[in-house]
Length: 473
Image (cartoon, rainbow, N blue to C red):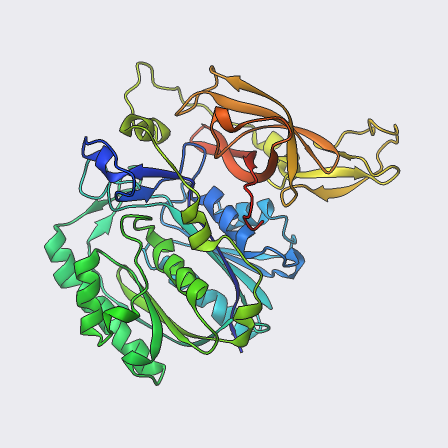
């Protein structure tokens, strides 16, 4: 039966207390939202969620990648292709982008389910990721959070079988972002709720429950797009769903993650579910869209992942609102950067295996790994005898470190480290850490991040992140 075989998620390590937006001191335990840091965007978060999803799974089994986002920056450059390269997937993998609506995430999930059910793919990776911004101190800034969700869709060993889906479409202007503008805008809140969210989500839920041949009370958990707590309760009531069935919308902890929001709530529901339970997920945007699933016995055997719960548990709070503004390049500058073409497309193509895939070369004569791959092995001097060696899914340790106060960063210093991974030494920046945490022999994993922007494009590479005790990898 076609359904979800595995899931993964990513929530940025950085949190912005909502009190800082309002000019008040932050209090421990107060409401906050997850914010992508200066070196993160929709693509880096998508890669992180996909890695979480594919833990323990042979990546060569993935036949298709469906990527959903409303905030991926490039218009004529496919995000799914970047994700596939970063994951070191097969070259003949099908890639497709979904955008244009907040329900692109569930739409991509259904596209993957349909492709697998039709036999067009054996296993499809579906990733939804969004990094949207509200104007500083505007009505949306405190509501919008950042995050990503990933699912492996298959017809074998499924943990949750797809049982029904239903959508309603409405031409309705509530939230929008004009091309070239950084901020999402929204119309008057009461109008949006009364004419958009409640009627459209209510219609989609009633239609979905009817197609599933079920009663509202049959679903153990219902993961619904939540405009706010009051509206969520009204939507549930309109569909005959009891509040006890609602999955925690994570308001005040995560924020509305756009196209990834409903999929992330579905993952949170799967993390708490037991075999034999019915689950429902519904997203909103230009109408509404929902899917129904039933969990199987295979759910209990799925290896542990960080998922939504694990990522929410690891966090650090920004110390000031100004630090957030700098991380989003929203702070005023004396000099604006000039326009240029950015990194040479020729260089990017030539070095994409190392830069995007984090793939080194293993000497077939002696086994030594090098990144980047040279002509001659430094260990045994053999020439042009290499095979690919993926390092992105390996762990390493810190051999040396330094603090750079000159390289641009939202919160200086930039931490530079030399790491050892699989016998190979690689110099990278550190992420998800502070200077007082860095030490020699610190265990690290590698995360896909932005290094800088140039020519209106993000340049990506991998960074080292502390491998914290007890976390799944």
